Length: 363
Image (cartoon, rainbow, N blue to C red):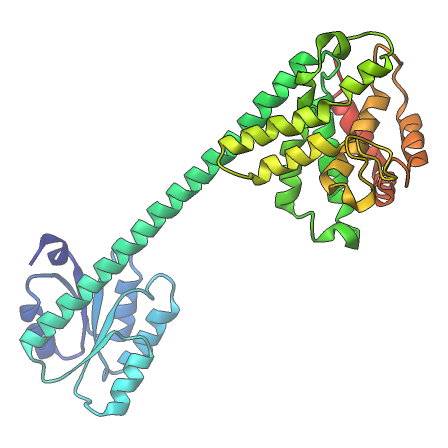
């Protein structure tokens, strides 16, 4: 018998000393402990050194074996300990009752030592196999959890690095990236109060939108410095080139997705935002002139966030507007530039936008 089996502990529960002596002898290869009543059996089973298997007599004074088994199976600490009933009752109903209470086996007296030894060994092997499988499942779950965390970190780093590249190319961004992603998270959370958006904006989606938002202007890496950093007003030709940045952004993210082997959920939102955040509700935006609900929700959110932040920020071509002025301009764009429902949601929590702007203000 292998060492792992021999180290298993068996609790013998019987009120008859002669029966106990026989079982102690039969099971001499194992570690054994004894209880002569149900109360003591439960005490040992619930101790810090519980048995690996219990041989339980049914007919005992006070608490009988059935009640002991029932209490064992009702306790989270002891419910997995295999119980084998030992009894002189040979009728089918008694056996059915015992097995129905959760016992794994039923041995009648007088016992046959070889049968007791084999059944005990088999049930201990089953117990060890079950525990091994559970341990393997725990290890597997931990590896899956670690891999999931690793992938999430990779996503975050990928977005951060790409966003930093865009920020280095555009000296006006500063805290813009941090502010806009927080605006989007706050506004998306508020929109869940509207039936139209409740089902689509769950916690996971909002978190992905938050993480994807920094890539909204990644396409500016494709715009020449002479245009991107021009202090004055752009010519029509220059503005046409600037209007290419959504397409450049989409193409860059598509290239990243292909490297990842196909469409990625977290980059899909980034691609939608990068490509469509300059679209307008009435169809007058670019690059495709999308209208109304044809514009992705992610991009509609960014449109509000991006414009609000541009308005309250100082630029070489304009002073910073106040929060009140920015909200007024966005309200005037309700139904033309912006999704009307999103403007309504913004008005309900505009103080949160102001607080985000103050918390992440440029130095």
